Image (cartoon, rainbow, N blue to C red; front, top):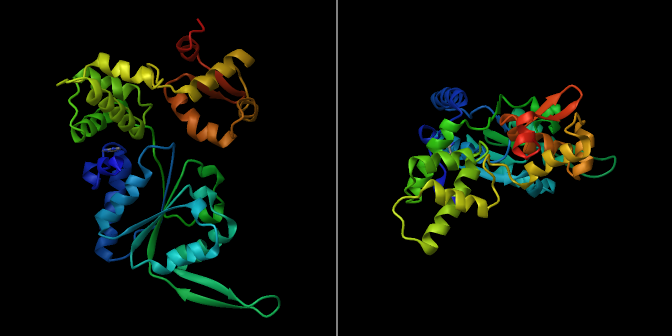
Length: 315
Ligand code: ADE
């Protein structure tokens, strides 16, 4: 897909997450020097910030293959066993949505991660024995939006645990510039800023908006430069508002305002009212609303801020 081509391949092309990049660079160099597998790495944070991209970059930098799977695809024991047996020394196994692993699969991972070993139970009933198989040393990179729902035995087996934060405006502008160049789009400076501002701190959203802008341009115009007006036109078609809020963000704020007069409301009450899973609200919807300062978490629950009220036109 086009998104594949947009992904940065090497660490030095990857914009933002500065502190994490430094830690990762040193760890990669050390693993290379020792010719060992990199320690297992857990990435968590809101979706669209580049967890898969980082796994691919780590593979590229180490010069090894990165196998990509999502946890729900690892249904039967033979799914995970097959993958673990196929790994070559120091390769990477990337498991997306790692909080969704089933128990049996997870238990195979414990010994695989810790001792590079798979324990198979042979036989049924009272006459069983265990047969251990060695596998190649490898690096597990797990990604999740819901780090709180990882079991502690799994969590504890990661040598690195890294939270990815929403990108600041400056880094997002650089990403928008980079992607626009790759898409052969020329954006005016204020158009770059406008896209960055409406991307809710998320490169995946910035890239998606840019591709929609390109669609509009390639259909009915012959423009050399994309102006801010054209960006605004494209984004209103996509129902992305001036601050980058989408319909689920607005729905959450609207619900707090209409039903609870702005809060405070506990997470579970909020989740029930919206018909959403509390963890999804906490890990997917809220981070951006907290960052833009439209929502606050207090000890008594969620509260819409004055700015949040204003944004929704409540004063
Ligand atoms: N495209 C998406 N995310 C990116 C990032 N962090 N750096 C560079 N390009 C990107």
